[in-house]
Image (cartoon, rainbow, N blue to C red; front, side, top):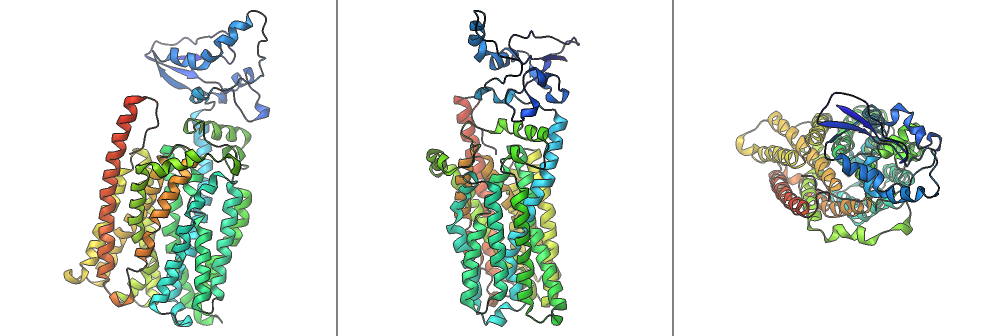
Amino acid sequence: MAYQPVATLDDKPESRIPSSQSSTSARFTPDFDSDDEEDGGGLEDLEDEEGYELREIRHGQQGEEDHTLGGADEEEDEHSDDGADVPLAGQRRRRRTDSVQSFELYTPDEEIRVRRKLDIRLVLFVAMLYMVSFLDRTNVGNANVAGLSTSLHLSTSQFEWLLRAFYVSYVLFEWMTICYTLFPPHIYIASCVFFWGLLACLQSFATNFAFLLVLRVLLGIAEAAFVGMPIYLSFFFRRDELALRTGMFIAAAPLASSFSGFLAYAIMRFGDILPISNWRVLFFLEGAPALLVAIVAWYWLPDRPSTARWLTARERKVATLRMRSETTSSEPTKFATHSIQWSTILSPLLNPLSYLPALMFFACNVAFSSMPVFMPLILTDMGFPPLTSQALSAPPYLLAFLAILLTAYLSDRHHTRTVPMVFHALLAMSGYTLLALARTLHFGVWTRYACVFPVCAGFFSCVTVVITWTVNNQRTAAEKGTGVGILQFIGQLGPFVGTGLYPKEDGPYFERGMVVCAVCMLCVAGLAGGYCWMLKKENRRRQAHSKNGFIYIT
């Protein structure tokens, strides 16, 4: 293999390193656009052995790449012969937007190291925030088993309204996902976390239905701002890396449900020694952590790769450069309300392809919103005592946690979204179908409990894939904001159906709710197949007109 370094300046001759002849060669590509002042530019970068990535190129492509690097400046070089100023070695050249992929100044090892840091210090922290969010959203189910309805004299319909009230405001404020591209994310996210933590804690002081209803509405507004987190992650990770990171983020939801079950078990187990009601302790203990992590989030979360304070200057450069192949010319690098491009924001609204993922998310959310809330009640009506029900609600979520991570990893590795979506939708459907037929098939309590495991693993994984799929297939940050807004606005109507599927009088088998969820998951599988077919058709059309156009991920 022959290695051909490309000089930083046009007037520096090109040299070759002898090697055996091969059909491929690798190119050193210099960076002319660094944000690290101390690194310098031009010839200084050539002396840094870590400043290069060996990239294979086929013979026949060399001329095209040489034109990309130097073609734009040939006219400039012609004038330099008659006395024009020649650029100095340390002077940076203006970067062309059509050669952005030629300016990757990093080694594969550097990229791996940066990506690992982002996973550990960013994704895991964001996952913790989502865990706190999901905990505060769904703990009303555990609080109900711990005596909420009895203490406040709530009827079944009033309790269902507490669930719906959250989703009413949650849906109405989904448009706030666009704020991730308008305001500095570290300020926006930290503020949201603080306010929902405060509201979650205030639930422990509720004395009547009306007070608790208002708090649930406000909690929905605060948490609606958080659903655009996959947009934020797309600022740091490429399209083929996003499923695993979104999976790590979404996996916090079943982990939160599992933790909530164990915490509710501990509070009810030792609650007799406490001077206040168990459900009040539960609300407060699960809301208080948000107040603490909000302060940390303000200082810890970067707005974009170049501002991550826990990366070195070199790592910030690599983190920025590796995302340039993902960035279009319209991608914002500043967060400001005056830079809104309405044509870009509105374009997903006019694209029919934006609505199929939203319909899939709607069907997923019928199950996703109902099972975590009603799991303790379902287990209690299966015959388990309330204390045991709280503990038994945890293992299915632990399985879902592992399933999400494995699914996301395989989805990125094999560059597919359709296959895992269809598989997990059918898996969840099979679990719901068995639960719906439990009375007819004379299933015992433990057999019915076993059927809950594929249900949780299935719909949690589907939610992960459909969110990633939506973000993947939007080109710019503004389009991602609108696309996720459509996904969430339509998708979050699902909980209005889901929260009414398991009234106490339908126990202990809850056939109606199980049948509805089974049908919804079957619809998810069908919609995923149809969406894949439409994307492939559109990709063929685009490739016929342009070989370098934006290609949808299927």
